Image 1 (cartoon, rainbow, N blue to C red):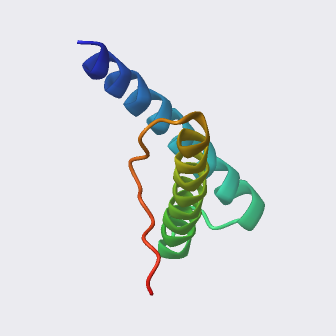
Image 2 (image 1 turned 180 degrees about the vertical axis):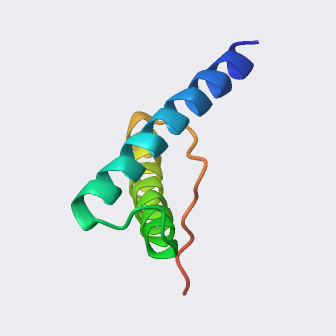
Length: 75
């Protein structure tokens, strides 16, 4: 039940941030609702998600928890 509530609240927060990022891109880059604005939003959101997930994985490894992302070294 806690997992469901956490996921729901996370989705609400993500939608709020999505709108904030879109509005910021519209104002800063003057893109409006153009295709370039949508791609800019998608790229920035993806980069932000990758950075946050990588940091959380490092933090989980330091604390001793299991990270959802495991890096394997080739060799």
